[in-house]
Length: 350
Length: 285
Image 1: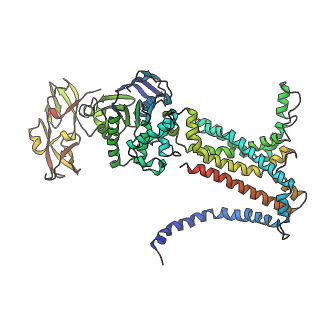
Image 2 (image 1 turned 90 degrees about the vertical axis):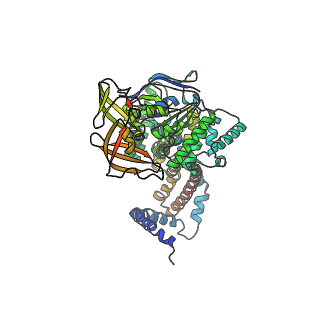
Image 3 (image 1 turned 135 degrees about the vertical axis):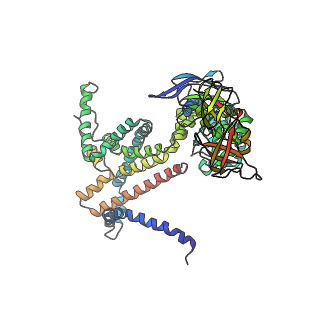
């Protein structure tokens, strides 16, 4: 079901946790709230789940105003950060719990628990206790328990935080596939920008109780609306310059004309490391500078360079690598670095 | 032959020995000042070479009846303590810092006063012309003073007052260990407050309930001062009979035999409570 949040404000004493949040998650959409800790994302989740009553604003699920409804009347499935599985109940009893609370008949419960266990590929684990399962399995049980009753909305509160990297990646894709298959309207909370990019239909970047930007992963990555978003998502080079007479003056790099640049005043340009041109490729670029290679970090698929220009802060560059390629630059050597207007994004000043 | 397994156990065993060393002073103290005298006392019950004293203590109708009364009183005290303590413990887990501080203060305050003083205080409160009766009469609620002292009611009030903290703390500790997200999860999954409590919080706190019950029951069974003073001779517990044998009749062997019976019953009850609460604990992490 469609979730819409309008004008949510929540204060704790003098601290404003949420300073007016407007957000819509369309039916079947996977929307991620991405933000650093303390950005208010958990408070927003609690307001949607019904564990926190907002001071102002409304929460609508479908056509219904649920702002003041108790959590149990909202029909929302939630996966907690630490899973919150009931330790004294077996896996099957955990998954049956929301159905029992809804007074579903015994045979129907057995059937649906079985189906849901199959869905998360834990058919043979029904009789085990949660503590007899691995972290990844517990996470799947928590997911099964949250979707078994056909919730109007699925909430995921940093559910992958406690898992090791490999398991996390496979579970992320598994959850994503399941969410698409069941067309579950999903609100996902994370501070991990990579995770947000992998999983989401849209991402809402939050900071200081406000949504800074909302858009597709490509939007927030390529066209961040503020320094904060540019810096928070992915690796970035933020190059400061000054606009005058239709040209942006970049110390050390010369000048650049950009359609999005203001007529005058300070300008911040975002240059992603993978957009940076290095060596022969840099010769045709509009802006060029000679840099010293401080570090060359081999990453398998690519190599990451930390570069020091004669003027200005250090820059990052990421170059794709194929096994046959010779190493592009050695540490301590000097390389030509450059970029053209189409490589950069003008970060709006807020 | 030194197997690699034995070598690996080496350091662990060494550490165990160190830990034992830390407990040694307390162990020696207990052995010398508690275990040894108790054994000496128990030995007295068979010092004439026969089991007559023990047989009399375990079969004489009077003493068996008092033992059953004692078990009943201890059971009642345990149940009343449980009913009073659980809500208090639950409230403590949800109260703010000030509430917790006040609650803890109120619970610990009685520990700073001797049981004797507290029992006399109850006598002042509950007597015929005590504070309670006088207040009720002054308000015109009663004509005749209520019999609050020198009966089972008075004994129960005094014993519950002394033993309540022993029930609150184990339950409070068990409740504190329960992740608050579990109740939240239950409510999010459609459970009412009550269902969330009954299906999740209550079962997870049973280990603490068991520990509190065992503690209170065992302590109550051997209680002496409070029932002696508040019961006014009309409520007799087994410990009072033992004291009578020692102090008035100077019959040490029979006092020893009664003590042996009390100890046996106490250990048996403790074993039962322990087994019940262990089966509850098995289900919790």
